[in-house]
Length: 229
Image (tube, rainbow, N blue to C red; front, top):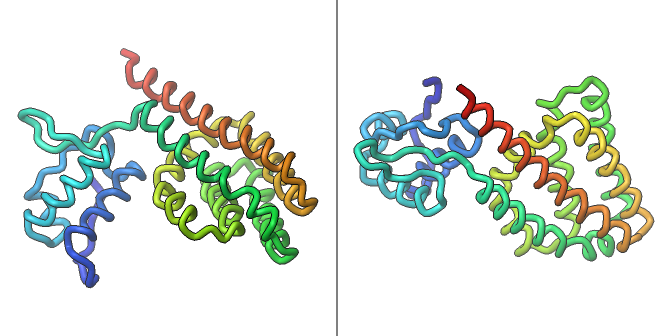
């Protein structure tokens, strides 16, 4: 396995650093579903003792990212349709709360910044570069919600961001939806500029709901491919 951790030099508690590193590696797929996390091996990789590693693993288990399996030990869980549905439902509900404040707060400078991001996305969309487009799409949505200025809501939204980045990358693989979603990004900015809360809300609701549906469809397709003989 290619995953290599660097020695830890941060001042935060070691268990917290280990938790964050492992969480990111699991969510991004660097540590794949079904992988055993052997304490001795990962303690060596992280340059820590097994005690803080165990504490990190217990926290990951509470997050539903790993599970203890009889005679196998700690194993990375695969994301289920229920996981995706719940994470998107939480994220989407919170994102909808920010919309009136985005319309209220958006300045000409904010709108110009969003259009700059869209121009960069246009270039990658034109050459069908999905790998480059996916993180830019997430960055665009982050820029949108930050205009709201609702710090507490934003902190909760951003706590789910690692999950959403991975799920969005799955959803954006579908070419027909990718083109439609990109066109919707442009229309969302138009509505912000026009201070049109009604149409902005209507489009955002359908936009993020379709993103969830496409991710669930991509997850189902992955499962079907894994189940093929």
